[in-house]
Image 1 (cartoon, rainbow, N blue to C red):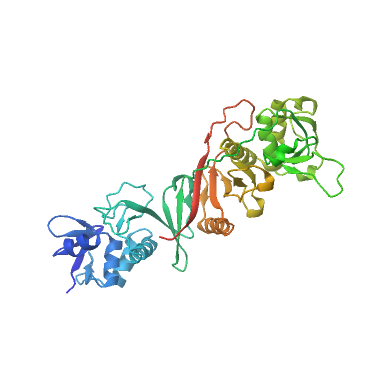
Image 2: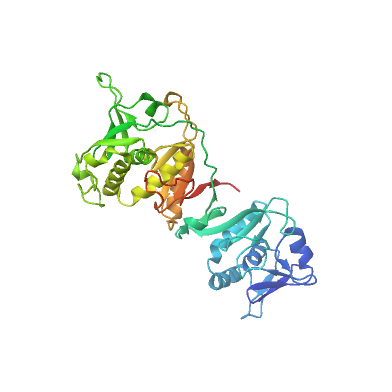
Amino acid sequence: MQPTGDLRGDAVHVGGDAKQRFYDSRGYGRPVGGNAIELSRVEAAHLLFRGDLAGVTLASDDDPAGFERFFVDSAVAVDRFAVRYLVYADLRDRGFYLSPAREPWPGGRAEVADAVDIVAYERGSTPDTGNVHYPVRVVGERESVPAGDVAGQTLAVVDEESDITYFETGRPDLEGSTDYDPPADLTGVLLADRVVVWDAPPTLYERGFYGQPLTGRAAAVEGVVQLSLVEAASLAADGVLRLSEVVDDDPASHGDGDPPGDDPVSADAAADPVSAAAAIVARGHAVEGDRFDRRLATYRDLRDRRTVPKTGFKFGADFRTYLDVETVEDLPHSEHLVRVVEPGHAFAPRELSLDVRLAGGVRKELLFALTDGSGDRGEPGADDGIDDGIEWLSVGRLTP
């Protein structure tokens, strides 16, 4: 005959041989003296569903409740009980020993973040003997997830049909080995949203993978490279790019930032790298507002890490990255897609799933750069320490 439990506060108390039956053999609950244990509501519901508990006596009833009544009572009493139960049951079915991690659930003793709901231990181990394998944070598909406090957690997203998708999050090892120093005497013309370098040395593109050459079958002009604004601002901040002209050749291209033509640096004054950097950053603000600062800070951090960032537009990202570029002719597969977001950004699970799926489909790892862009802002001579004001986060699909 299966035992029954009784609800005492937020825990289900089970006596008899419960310690040997449930805790010692299968890691349910926690001992509370003698052979008795306390179960969290989600553990008790799972044992009821499996038929291992005969019922649970609720405070308002004399007769023990079965699974259906106990489940409904728990859904009323405990925030997000239904989605937590679904994840708990799924991981149990996958062979993991688990502990509920959030108060007021008894169970786990592991030190995990407050947002973690369930701790999954290494397969074959119990809460007493095992190390934490997955600190699981349960999320409904319509909830939001703050990007700044999720690293190191396993996200279990429960969709509207009760299917579960798992994501692993962490801090990426983002170090490249590209060895290239750009020449110190580049000169360009600032157009509406790019900089053209007319006499660029071949290595600028071929070895450093900066910009895009202006070429054609019948081209009579060589050495023309078009730089994006973030590339140009970074080179100017490094003291190697000057401007011979500042031109606004397409006022309609400006966005909702500063008004067209409001660049504070004239063409004559932009002949040194400091003024060139100021002019390019001002143009960046004009075409995309404060987002330019965030993208520039991320670009410079990636270059400091000896990686090569290029536009990720085709993949719906800010950048794609190459860790080791010897020559463009022998270009490796890019390893990452980078999305730049503000430190207070919150993920919508549906959008996160789309980003991760796209990155996986093109064999890349999805990274997020959390920054407000307030670092050096591309100023020459500023301290460009790696990770200065940038928090890196990786997210990928997981099959537990």
